[in-house]
Length: 443
Image (cartoon, rainbow, N blue to C red; front, side, top):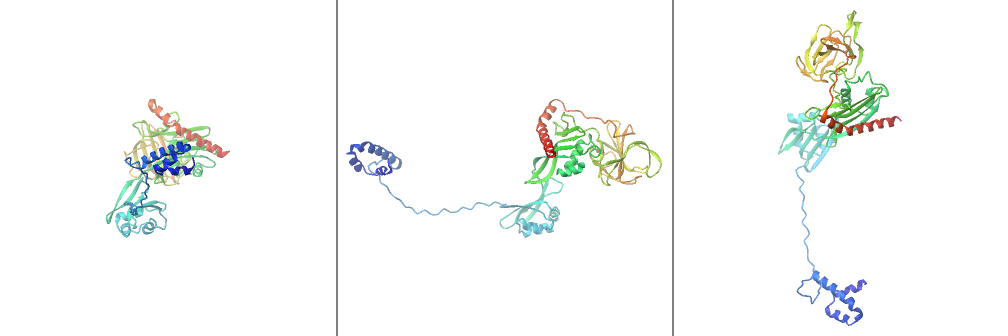
């Protein structure tokens, strides 16, 4: 049917009766009447079916009243990085803050001035302010801590407090080949010093990073980056690492057993934390080894050299090679100069001579852990230049630490090993992909 025939719907019943006189239209009109009845039932009261009147109603509507949304206490949030030329005033202006009270607080209040001292170049500072430029909160990351220093408005005054950062961890995979030196390879791979130091600490009992690594050796690692507000705060823990050197493959995976502190383990579940480190200095060079007799450089007499001399710049940190208790921490006139002796478990002890000074708080009977900084390289006593004289003793007799078979550690067992093998599976896959990336770059 065409659209014109639908116009019969609003017609009266009398018009419909006339159309019914034509039999050829009866069926069509009956259908239209039925539709008209249905339409009337939908739009008109059921009490009166005699008429189907249309009425147009025009009504003046008042415009809607606009509603303003509440902006809240902190409508504006902005972040800026501190520039070298910044003053508290210039930084606040870039943050959209034009609050004289806040500026006066930063300049005159003792706590406010201390917050200003944390504004180091590159630091990301966040400010919340009102529509009129008044400061609500100012947040500054604290150097060396996972915390923020926050200044907050309280009426016309300000309060300042320390607040822990909410950190988000991100995993990063790095891999490199040694073409010249270990340090050069870490720099080329973009590995920060804090992560490189962790790698040395992990494998310190297995390999000497100065003497053992060669051109062509490769290493890969997976480590965390800790972020706050989308900005990197610091580099976190190494989760997995691998070194391929001289046909040796060393692997380490971080794992925290139940009711115990975390540690690094081999692929087979053996702890990499050996009883003793091979070297008490992270990066150094042996310039005089253990020997029965040598010409003393100062005394010019032939004497036995019952230790190992490590050449290193003055001030280089010296590490405890194992857990133990400080037995000696004093200056000695017998040539050692500033000397530390640590008593370890069983019959073992270690000695560290010619130190420039001791670590803060270190004294006799202090307990130390493996890897703790106990002192710093110097040239006190009979020494021609800065170096560390290191001795390893068994029953108070000096032995060669470079050739001694040091005690090993015990493996994970039972349910702990099952948990470890399951948790390390994904890290193994990441190390394998990192190694493949290095080989592809070489080709």
